[in-house]
Image 1 (cartoon, rainbow, N blue to C red):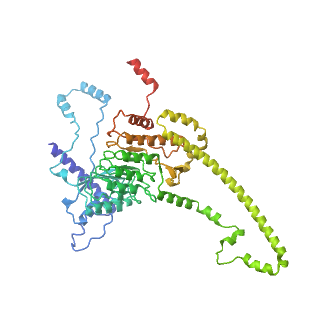
Image 2 (tube, rainbow, N blue to C red; image 1 turned 45 degrees about the vertical axis):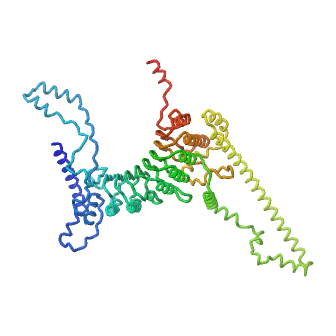
Image 3 (cartoon, rainbow, N blue to C red; image 1 turned 120 degrees about the vertical axis):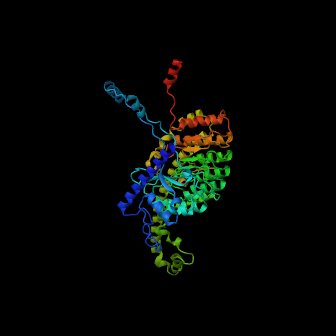
Length: 568
């Protein structure tokens, strides 16, 4: 009986949804099937179909135009939801019913009470034989009465080939409110992934893409987060991604000349990424200042990958390519001012002439020898005027040089002070030493109110940040935009934990010296299930530091402990 009732209920839902679609199509003047016009003349080429924005109607029409039979077309159904808990009955209504029954008793009271008892809610739904294995496209809508309000699409357990992705390419960009696409175990090929990457940017509101449990030998997942990508969240769990795919993903996150500007969350848990892939992803975080959450849980990352991540989170030296790019950016940034400074004064025009053209002074020497007496006065006056002009200009230049040197000395002193404070706190192992050194640098914090200005909230190239020169290298602060890092269930030992601890301590120091609302640093880090004991000093200390930075952590109040002791 249960199977028959459930099947009848599902049929009723499909009929209702079909009626709604037909009504919408009639209002728009469309047709529910593309075969209505083709019955008159089968040899006639069908007219181009104009999408209506109703996913079910557009999807079925394109499937029929691609010569798919009705029993081969995946059904579009509303995604099932768990049963809602029933609200408890009101006591007042019960009392009123009891009073009424006491006044007017009926002989069939026991039978009515038995019939009024409702059946318990079901946590499962039964289907017909083999119906569970048929391809289905599940959708969620803002309003089930309006088929044009599809917001999420879910596909489970059937292969998406090139024919089906071509149909999706025509349907999905028309759906205005589509924001989530969730695919699981869909067996994608390299060409299908490339096709997805080509038309997903056309879906303006699509921000979340989930492709889990799908293996692809070529691992072209980096194409989904290219420069044109609008995705803010990407999940690639349990896809068998190796270091090959991780290297390409790291390059897609950022290079010296380009960076992804939209992706906020990246989940790569449950794959086969080792230290090589972790280092590549860490290099992708060097110039990326958009990603907020990264998960590398349940992989094969060990100490080398953890150290590289800690280096990128704290500070790192610039490579030769990065130094060259930094100089280019600085030259482009100051190009209008440099163009004015390069224009020579009128007294120095002779220097800009080529060597083949002789100046007028060489020609004047022969004339002076011939008639010295006639031109002595003119030459003396001209030389005096030139000397006066040069002296005036040299005095003005000297004043400017003095001003520039004084400003440069002040900035150098301020940078040296920050450098000493950051180095001292970076070497320190305990929090008590950091608090004592923080008092010394409190007088210098008065010079850093510029960090609170709203201009820092704008996107700034990391290569243009403040540089520290150490060991003949240029060092810049690391990535402080990443706030959530998941490294649980890997192979990290105590040596890798030390690198992560130093990175978190360095971020706290920079935050105390120059607070920034946009760069808070790591706030949550998951490290459970690694090759380190829970009683290890470094691990315990790292957990204490992270617990204080967790935004959801609430320290116990002082009165709670006293009350518990008195109650005990």
